[in-house]
Structure formats: structure tokens, C-alpha cells
Image 1 (cartoon, rainbow, N blue to C red):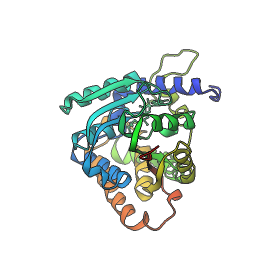
Image 2 (cartoon, helix red, strand yellow):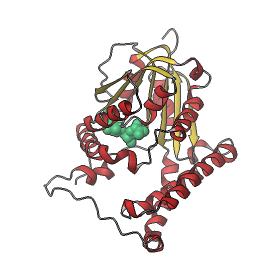
Image 3 (tube, rainbow, N blue to C red):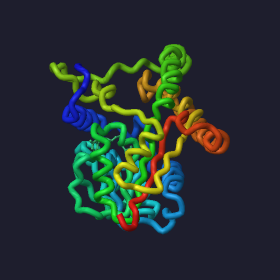
Image 4 (spheres, rainbow, N blue to C red):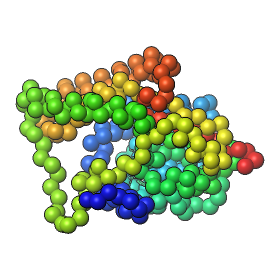
Length: 309
Ligand SMILES: C[S@@+](CC[C@H](N)C(=O)[O-])C[C@H]1O[C@@H](n2cnc3c(N)ncnc32)[C@H](O)[C@@H]1O
């Protein structure tokens, strides 16, 4: 496929890829709607929102909500009362609605829309947030102008899980190491090699084949801060998260992706999950307070619309 150049092509590829990915998305990324997943989301949200998380947010908007990992946890924890989840992919929003039903969450609305053209009135929300979404958006200035427009004065924004440029380059090492180690690892575990997902053989790549095309940005911390300030937000802060946990996670995910999923033993998955949580705690306690934020894989951006703005 030719390199993607126009914003329309990028949006179209994101829609098609995520529509196909939706049904297996939670399993692929180990999305957990139980207490462990909630603790993860709440820790990130508290880090970005500070003490205002305790008062809660009556109306919140999630952009690029996917299957609901971030927003449904916040709603379940009582941080959000009325949640509007938006996404460009109808498939993802269907999966989100199923998850919301299963969790017994009723005050969750879904709206299919591009994050850069939000169909909501000015000053409608107390919180605008997203997880792993900004790096998919072709026109970030336009998106931030929209986030600011729909925020109430004194409302907050929070964007977590955005890949940093340096962190992304460093993550190539464990990804490559996993490719090299995969045959030996599969033999040790007795796991069969996975076949690439079957696709209809049309002239245009579709579905899973588009995975490499949907991520269009990585960020320097200062670049995210400039985008938020440029839209008129204040109290803007960018923090870095996860270094060792991320390397460990990419290595294990790289191995697992080469095997038939049902052949990966439960004890391996436990080791990978618990190891990740342990290293995440180590990152938080020992590395994040001391190392430059640009080194970490995930960036977390927060800001506020001025009370008189
Ligand atoms: C990496 S997924 C993250 C989903 C979810 N926030 C999570 O953390 O699991 C990115 C999501 O952004 C959505 N997306 C991509 N481009 C978009 C756009 N232009 N406007 C709105 N959503 C978009 C995708 O459909 C997908 O659901």
C-alpha cells in the first residue's frame, strides 16, 4: 500500500482497521474490566486529574473510547456520572455498549464521530479525556480546539497512553528480541505458530493488514504541552509513565503474538501479567520521579480550561 498522505485516508484506515479489530480487541490487549484494570485506570486518572478526581465529574466526554477500557472504569468507580463515549469506529462502539451492559452501566451514551469534529454544543462537558487516541489523529490542532470548545470553563482534559518518540524507539529493542526468541519460546511451551489472519484477497488491504498504518504520531512531551496551550488550556502538565514494564510487556506480547492464542499456557499469562504489574510499581517508585519524562513509553497530558476562558 502507498504511504498514507491525506487526513481522509488516515481516518478511513482507522475506521476500517478498528471495525475489524473490535471483536478481538479486549483479548488481544488484555483489557480487564475487573478490579485490577480499574486500579490501573484510577491510578492514571488520579495522576493527571489530581485531587479534583475526588469531587467527580457530572458530565464527561471520551474521545476514541474504543471498547471502553478507560471511560467505563471511571464510570464504574463513580468518578463520572454521565458518560458520552465517542469513536470513529462503529465496531468499537458496539463492543463498548456490550461491555457497558455487562457491567450494568446505564448512563453511557455512544456517538460515532471523528474526534476533530465533535457534534456537541460549546461548554457541554466537565471532563474531556481519552486513552491511546491522540497518536491516531491527523489534525491535532483541530482536535484540541474541539476539546477546548466542548469543555466547560474550569473543566479538565486528560489524555493518557500516548507513545513518546524516544520511548517508541527504545521499545523496538524488546520487539525485535521477541521476534528472534519466538521460535525457541514456542518450542519450550509446546505452542503452535500462529498464521497471519485470513483476509479477503481484494486489491485494497483491509482489516488486520492495516495495523501498521493506523499509528501516525509519536510525541515529544513539549509538543503535547504546546498543543494544549495553543488551544487555550492552562495548568498544562505532561508526565512520563512506564519504562521497564513497557519493555517487559512488548517482549512478552511480541512472543505471544507469534503463537496460537489457545496454546499459550495460563501460567505464562500469569507470569507476564504479574511481572508487568511488578515492574510498573518499580517504574513508579524508582524511575519516574528521577528520569526525564521523554524516556518513558507513555505520556500523560492534563490541563484545564480557564474559569473565565
Ligand atoms: C488504540 S485504540 C484505543 C481505544 C481505547 N481508548 C483504549 O484505550 O482501549 C484507538 C481508538 O481511537 C479510535 N480512533 C481512531 N481515529 C479516530 C478519530 N479520528 N476520531 C475518533 N476516534 C478515532 C479508534 O477507532 C480506536 O477505537
